[in-house]
Length: 431
Image (cartoon, rainbow, N blue to C red; front, side, top):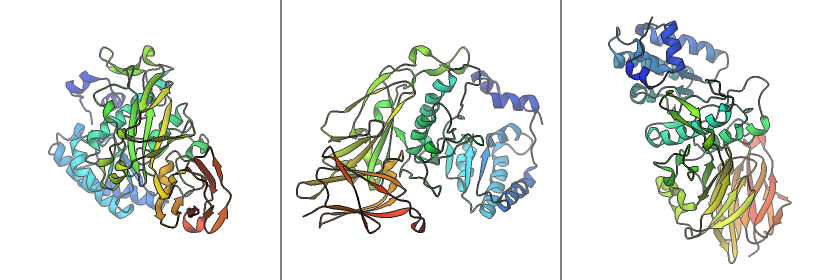
């Protein structure tokens, strides 16, 4: 079936997907067979051990709707078939959706699909051939994800798309995915996995330490351009159960060219940038469970790249940062608790994971000077404390710990297969 691209769409940009479809044509399974179409594919995939599927470019239904009752009627029949098949073959939920930013998806697809892509594709390289595109394109993708989440996140759980773990900017992407609050998945070629990077994102059982909310740009980024502004760092915030997190990214160096009708690099903007981060950048009141953390008198802040701890209150000066192009810093904000007299404590979780705070599943402060935690994962546990503890225990066994700089306590936590990787961690102070 031949399609025509509307003058409006064609006038905005020359989209590779639309052009190729217009050139080669596209087939349509009759709407009466939509349910059979999806079920026949999904039944086979499920029998082969596949646990989920992805639906891509479903917006193309609009190209083909003229002879089938219009866009809405055609979409209803296809989404109905997709929904039935998902319920039957994949528990109704194991599905990713891509290139679905259309009203049909929001009204019909979300019966079974709780997530949706909030940006264009991850491009490892510039499709137009700019060799430096593998650098400047990455900040562009991140800006689109964070700003589109402002409105799409009110309807669906934002999906920040795949990336490749062996890309030159892989860690730049990985950190944003770690705190985005959505799924994390890669499109690596076989044999091209960077497992050291992937281990910072996922546990040994494949689960991830996911944030409680979906990431959004901080208020001082709104109505500004982190792509061009000389003083705008892209900062995105989110929550874990027991703390907040901010990722700061230098995304400068690309943008839209009206004459060429495409995104391109601007070398004059691909430069280092200065900025600042403050605990008030986190919108603590956006989630009821996080509201109390926003009233803390003092916070311990862990800088991932700097591997350092800073103390901060709402009245403190901001933390200044200096980022080179395509680099980041990750800040974990944890309310400080006065456990007993003159003893303060704030846990950061396993710092070998990008979202360290997400590894803390439960946290209880007991009156007898005991901090009781459930930690999922293996690696190096870090907490702020102004006093050395009496002892630290993991799964009932006392472990060696280091207390350095009069503020940092560290010890190793193993992976326990029998408990799904969850360990009981106790830090005890003398009363």
